[in-house]
Length: 259
Image (tube, rainbow, N blue to C red; front, top):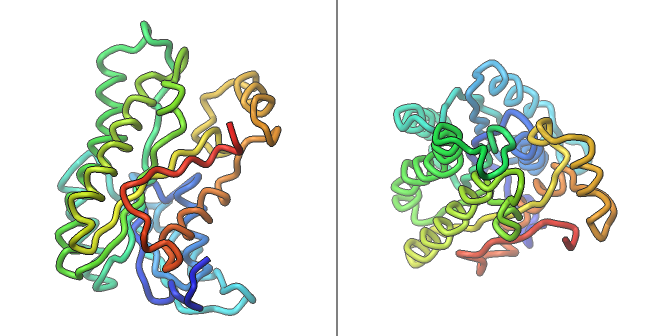
């Protein structure tokens, strides 16, 4: 939690992949703390619906504290979409304090020799190019402000390599991890920090392509004997964005239950 009471009130976060899973949970957590939340997704109806629901979320003791939601359609693999969404968010709120790149997917599970070029390129377009384009569109505005924090979604698969099921995904998230370090080191002296988070298996729609056996194996292999929840990652996003963590930069934090 932040050192300063109501630290997030009136600040704005831009969340890609904000219509479900960790992105949606993070939108709800920041709305709870009074932040303005820009919910970005490829499905405009879902983005608007999530954003509208945020206006109903009260503060820690159930009182409204002023945050507003804005839902925008954006395919992060298309630079024109990204530029349009960033411009709309700035037009509405004037400033964006935090960027959370949550959009990402393995597209489908596949063993290494089953990964074709189309799957490889689609995975990289979403996870790597999407993150790159959103950061590149946002950083000039953060430089004008003199400050900003970017949090990118990596994966604990950068440790395991995704062997036997998702080397393409793990590899792309390794690129996100590396890119986060580079951006944090390049722009840290100009007020912009960049971090990445690397969760293990989290109970979200991302796991819809996983078999019951895979989920059960992940649960049994974890020291806590369970998989993670989306809100647990969301609270970590809130924490690293708070004024309790202002010396954190160019790092990745693993959220795995100890696995």
